[in-house]
Amino acid sequence: NQLCAFKAQNGHSNVSTHDTRNKSLGSWVSQQRMFYKKNALSSDRIQQLNSIGFIWDPLEHAWNEKFNQLCAFKTQNGH
Image 1 (cartoon, rainbow, N blue to C red):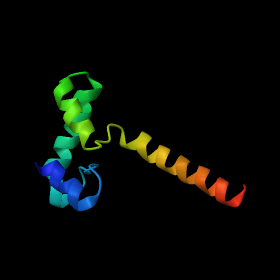
Image 2: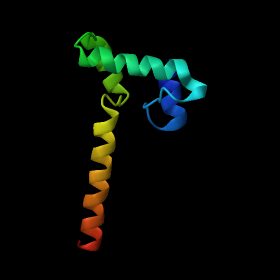
Image 3: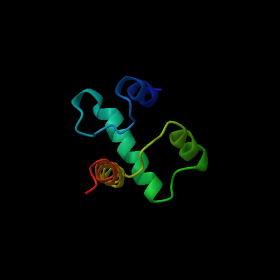
């Protein structure tokens, strides 16, 4: 499967639609997110994507990562 191969090579499954080398895969990933938001994706497919750590909302994921970095910084530096 292309997405699994992409994740193995890149360490994540967040394929950008702007990735010229993986344009069709990026479009497919975007389409899966759209179907998910519209509740048009079967629970089987959701489970398959979840099993590889699929990121359903890249903006929320990025925000959470930055917030976690901020918490770690505060813990380490006390401010």
